Image 1 (spheres, one colour):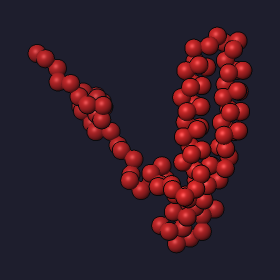
Image 2: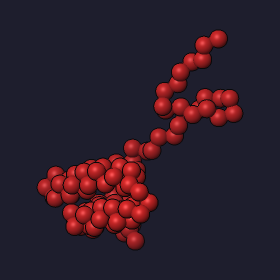
Image 3: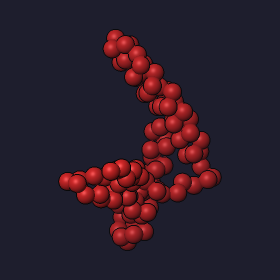
Length: 105
């Protein structure tokens, strides 16, 4: 008997096929970012640095790993990660205030 292939959106548990829980469309990770800020530019730079640095760190020798990882983190910080984080925190706080009517802490 041929087994049926399942999509990546399913999980087999105790012989049953269950749908994976998707994140809500209202979750903080789905917040739109403003187009008039430098957030998207910084995000793209950081994403490029990480996509280049992680494989390099993984494929390095154990002796080289810390230096490569520390260099990648320094590059991320230099690219403006802290500014981007502050902007995103503000977006999340504004959304919390909008949903709850209360000031986010």
